Length: 251
Image 1 (spheres, rainbow, N blue to C red):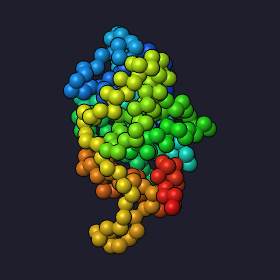
Image 2: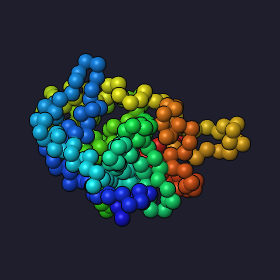
Image 3: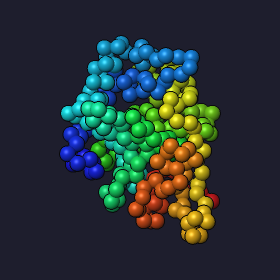
């Protein structure tokens, strides 16, 4: 079983779909739409037929593609096409063999929820593949697979360069990649950018110390608003997750 929690769903490994010429256009074109730009497949160096073929594969009701992004400590970030006939979407979540349930990051579709990752987390996951686990290991592909759930009010100055370099690694010329990266990091079509902060003790928690190192999101639409990233895990498991996400306090 590729992942648990989706009973009788026709889940298949999706990594090979990244080899389709129109894959990145199908995956990201909607995200690059801004008030000034109406995206077209040619932005990604492909034509409409290539993008349509990739989109058909990504939204196949009989084959739900799962993209696995394994990172530190045995954790895996997952991107799953949930291709229900009447309510298709994409679910983003983290799994670990020792957890009893998923850590939901975000959902795209009719009932969207996000953002799911800060830039700090996204960048760290992209750069720390677990080469012993199945899935996508190339840094540029890992970054772009998870980019749709980014929502961060405090992007670093080099964020556009980082995304541009990732796009260049897919085959785009540098000039086009830079412009596309700017569009991808502009206003998200589904949610507002969020503030991400380490949690502090709340009066509502009875004075209990929060789990250290896990960022909390201030955007109410996010599954990570006011809650742990993964419910039901122990403090020790949360500590390992924080280290794997690159958010464990250094001082």
